[in-house]
Structure formats: structure tokens, C-alpha cells
Length: 293
Image (cartoon, rainbow, N blue to C red; front, side, top):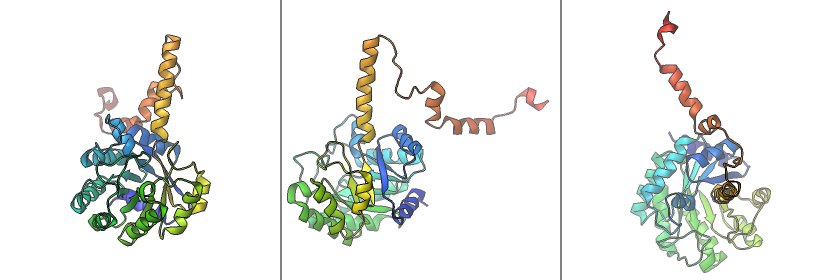
């Protein structure tokens, strides 16, 4: 039983917006969980960055699935994961869904970009024909062994073919078996508001800082009718900025600066589950000679 998928389905059945900040490793995933969010998003761009690559389609399915599995195994939140293009045709998509599902992921999204794909907020992308995309969605829906596993159909066609075509593709994907539609990079607030009205099913909004889509307050996204909002780069970009700042401060001061949060050694270990491991050690260690007298 995939508990993450069941939890996500329960959240989708409620009226509240599911807000899922992006994580790219277990540290950032635990940070999301600690902050009290209902779900976590595994960012593909962040995963690629953590492996030393830009989001140019250079990371393989197995690398993405393994990272998603580590994240899902480190927290109890449902994990929504980027699965790029599905890494090929309907055969590859079938394997992708099975690999993600067995790693405990709750949902994945598959896009209609041509390969090699790029971040949805970059230029010079291409999309495949709709009649080549829909077999992937049908295969993804059929491949899951747990009916709670959520299939999200993403279309990157807005920037290339216009909003009307993006909406048409989103609706066609929902009819083909997707559970949620993800129209990537609407370019005005009017377009953002229009998507949930025109798409005949639950919609996901991608909120990218300084991306192609204008900033939308979470309450406004909920009022527009979005069911899920992801914040893929919120921690990645923050860590870039804080890393630059704290290292510059070390150079300026000539000593170790106070890090943001002033987290001590014990708290640092606690953030990655040390308390749980200490309890196991105490539970199963052999009693000392003094304790048996």
C-alpha cells in the first residue's frame, strides 16, 4: 500500500489548496515537513542541479526515481514528483510510473515536451504532437498498480502554440486518464485565472520566482480554483542566496559567521532523524554489567 498516494487522494477530496514546496534532497524534504506543509514536491530542476547539471533533460529516469524514493522515504508527507517527458514513448512511461510508484511516490507529472526537454520557464523548447502525447498519458494511467497513485498531465504548449491549444491538450489528457492537469507557464494573471475555468478537471499551478508566470498569492490561486500549487525552486534559490551571503560574510569577518538559524550540532543531527535512531539504539542495545546487578 502506497500511503503517500492515499494521503494525496484524501487531500484532493478536500476543498483546501494543496501547497507543495519543492525539495531536491532529504534535507530540504525534511525542512518542508518540519514547516507543516501538507505535501512535498520533488523538483526536477533542483534534482538536476544537485547532480551538477542544468535542467536540460540530462538526468535519467533511474536517477530521478531514486531521488524521489529517497525523499519519499525520509518524510511522511505525500510526494509529488517531476517525471519530465516520461523518458520515451508509452513503453518508457509504463516503466517510469512503476518505478516511481514502488518507491513510495504519491504522484508524478509527465509533460509533452520533445526530448531533450528544458525547464518550462526557459526559451527554445519544443512539444510533441498531441496524438503522440496522449498514448503516454493512457499508458501512465494503466501502468499504476495502486489506483490512488495520481497521474498529472503537464503541457508546455502555451509558450509555443498559445493558451487555447494548452487548454485543449490539458482537457484531452484528462479524458485520456490523467487525474490532474498542469498547464505550464501561463503568462498573465488573466491566463492564470482562466485555466481552472477552461480545464475540465483539477488543475496544478507552478509558482516559480521570476519565472514566466506572474506571482500569485496562495489564497488567490485557491480562489481561482486551483487544487495544487507547487513551489519548485523556493528552497533551491534560497540556498543559493544564503550560501553566497554567508560565505561572503566569512571572508569579510575572517572567522566563522553565525549561520542563519544558529543551529547547533545536536539540532543539526535531530533534523535528519537522530532522535529516532537513538531510540532504536537504546531499545536493542545489550544492558551493561552494572544494569544487570
